[in-house]
Image 1 (spheres, rainbow, N blue to C red):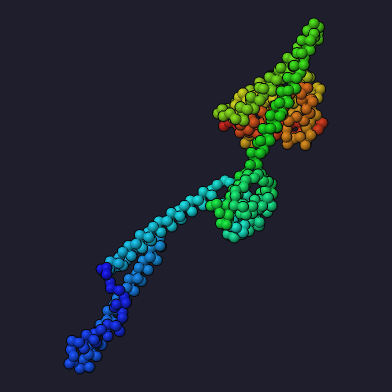
Image 2 (cartoon, rainbow, N blue to C red; image 1 turned 180 degrees about the vertical axis):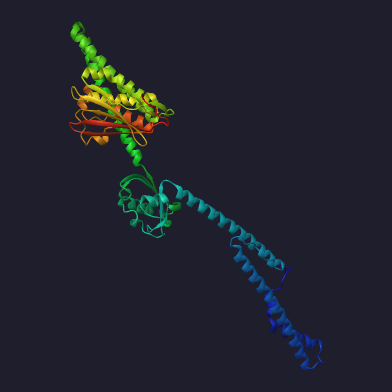
Length: 457
């Protein structure tokens, strides 16, 4: 038998011990009376019972202490505080202590990982929602709650259909739970303001019986930019194709014999030159627009508004004289604005050029400058045909023309106002337009003033 405590049956069996003692006394002391034998038997039985009670009490006390130590060990900041007596109990206590510590480490690690994962999901810009097999919400992050117009915290167990009333999305979640396979689709969610989303739904931990998690990535702006890119490529192709076709056609006519006719040949060469200049203008405007949209703007500097306007007026004066348009600049005190000298002059040239080209014969273009509370305001007025109200919201788009035939006839590229908008906004200002059919248009440029204004004589 190994060292330590004796087996419990050999100690607690008082009847067997008493019987053995009685036989032993009869053998050893045959002449002793029955009373002595009984007395000795009683004393020995009492001793056996006492030993059994002592062992039971000691074992029970150690078991209770071990249980209390195990319970407190699972609580935070609690240590093992039980040292049992006896080799076997000590070995058992040591094993339980080691197991409990390993369990605590695993529990704390799981809690940290769970908290970190929840923090990551909550801070994601993509909307995330997790559901159980019955499509009841178990987790949502802030992005999903804001997308669906909900306020946090959201009580777990709310049916998903009450939050996201979109058949295609609910069908995706149901399909993933049924098949246990990931799905990815592009959906337009009516519950999210009819915005487009790239939706990815996957079963949790590869087990559809545990639920599913869905991530929604908003691609509305990406789709809009993609449409703009396609429209831009189509417009550029069309704008370049028209003058190129004219250049090619007139050049072929010249080669086929028109060179022999001086008057016709000269006229065709002039048309080719005009179309080549139109191509050059388109390419130049495209490069300017590309620089404005993607390039890093130069640091703004104080610019004399009077000097910039005078340079722009001198630039367009020959065109205005040719078309019979009067240029008028109202009196104003010079103002110093923050901007980029070349870009600001280009803004005024584009606005004045448009006002001249789309004016009526013997019309007028007037420039007025005023000082507002926080901006210097430049108004460019014309007496042209005006712009229909339906076209005003799109007037600053690239290649957008109100009168396409007249615009091409005047040599416009369709990029002038887009350049104006990007250049002004790059300088921290804004541009707007007011127009009525038959009464002309007014383009207003608002620019941030410099700290020190220049005063005119």
